[in-house]
Image (cartoon, rainbow, N blue to C red; front, side, top):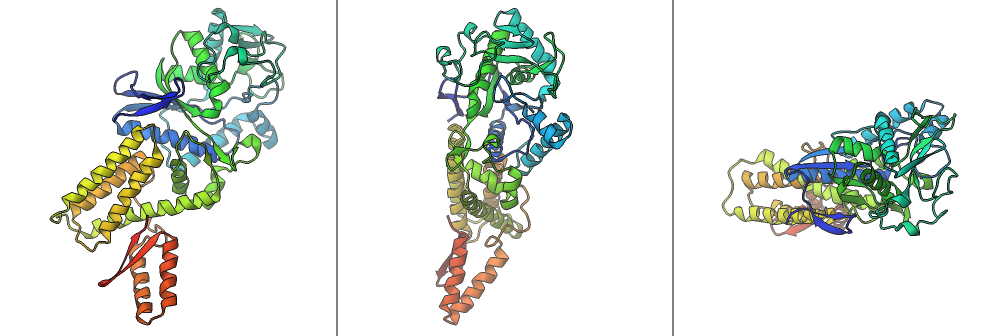
Length: 486
C-alpha cells in the first residue's frame, strides 16, 4: 500500500503523487503570534510534524514551509475592529514587534519541547509585504479586484470558482451572514486583499493606495508561491479556517497567476473542551505551557496522536492521565530492551528468528495504518501489540540474543521515534515507577517475603498498586515474574 491522504479539495482519499518526483513541497498555516500557543496548536503542529516525518521516512526530500503571522490582520475577517497584535501591544505597553518576537520565541520553545521538528523555512508575513502589494496590483489589472477608499477587495462575483474548496456557493453567501458589510465594498461578499490603515493602526506600510496592511489571506498565497512554486504538493492547516481563509488563498492564487495552488489539502480538526471549540477568543483554552506544568511533553504528544487528525479531540486532564499511563507502558518496554542490550552478548539464540517475523508483522501493520491517511491511532495500536509481544518475550525467562534485542530496539526507534517522534534516542535515567528493573526486583522480593509470612494484605496491596500503573505480576512455581500490562 502507498500513502493515501484525504484531500479536502476533492473530499476523498487520494493516492499521494508529488508534483516533482522525489520532492514534496509542504506549506502549513502557522501561528498568529500575539499570545502563548494553546493545546489546539499542539494538535495542529504535532499532526503536521508526523506528516513531515513520515514523508521523509518514505524517502522524499521535503521542503516544509510554515509562516509566522506577525502582521496585525483582522483575523476574524471583519471590516472593522482592532488587530490582535496591536491590541496586545497596547495592553503590555510595548511595540508590536516586541509582542511578535516574544511570542514567536514562546511558540518555538513549546514546539521544541513537544519534539516538533523545525520547518525548513519560517517566513514572516511582515517580510513579504512587497509581494502582497504586487499580487493586489495584478488582481486589479486583471479585473478581479478593485480599489475602494484605500483598500483593495477581491471581487467574488467575478471569480466563478470561488467556493470550490469549502463547498460554499457564491449565491449562498448572503449579506450580513458573517460580518457587517463595508461601505467601500461593491459586494458584501468581497474580501480584502489590502486594507487601508487608520492613522492609529499600529502596523502599516506605504502602498499605491495609501498607508495600509495586507489582508489576512494574502500572506499565505504569496509565501507558498515564493518558496514552493505553483502548484505545490500539500497545504496543511486547521479545518476551521477552510472558509474564508483557505478559500481566499485559492481564489487569489488562481486569479492572479493562472495556476493551481496546492494539489492536496490536508486539514486537521479542532481541539474541544466539553464539546466546544477551544480558542483564545472563547476564553476556554489551555496554553501548552500550562499543560506542560502538569504533564510530560511526550504525554501531550501521545494524547494528540491517540486520535485521528481529522476527528475532533476533547481535552481533559483525565484523558491526559490515561495518555500518561499508556506512554509509560510503551517507554517502559523500550527501557527494558535497552537494559538487556547493555548486559547481553551479541550472539542470538537458536529459534529466535520467529520473533523477527513478529516484528515484521507489526511493522507492516503500523506502516499500513500510516499509509491510510496518517491513521496514528491504528499505528499506535500496532506498536502496542508489538509492545505486548516484547513484554511476553522479556518475561518468558528464556535467553534472548543480541540480534533479536537489536531488531526490537530498531523497530522502536523507527516506528515510535523517527516517525511518531515519541521515543527518544536517549531515555532519561528515571522512567517512572514500575519501569525500572532494579526497583521492580525489590518490589517483587518484598512481595515474596510477605507471601512467605502469609501476610496476604501486604502481598495483595503491592500487586494491586502495581496493576494501577500497568504492571502485572505473575506467580509461577519457579517464582514471580512481572510485565508491563496492555
